[in-house]
Image 1 (cartoon, rainbow, N blue to C red):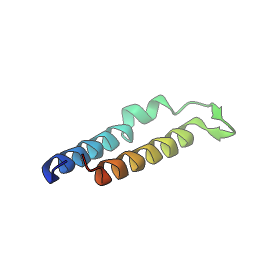
Image 2: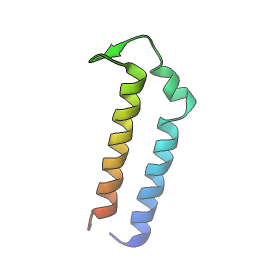
Image 3: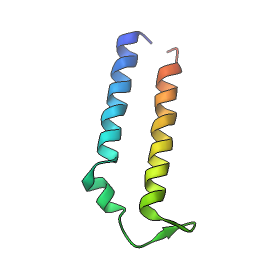
Image 4: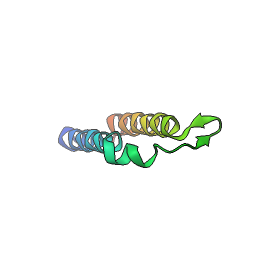
Amino acid sequence: MNEESRGARLAALCMLGMVLFNFPVLALFNVPQVLFGVPLLYAYIFIAWAALIGLMARAAESDG
């Protein structure tokens, strides 16, 4: 994978993060429910954050 392609993938993941942590999507998870004892909104934020970190690490380290 060349540097331009890697940069484009990281930019796309950044845009995905902006969408995932913006109002319309967060409002979907702002309900009075719990997941394993954690409010659903907090669980969504941590799961989405961890997934983005994993995807960015994979995109940054992949050789092609």
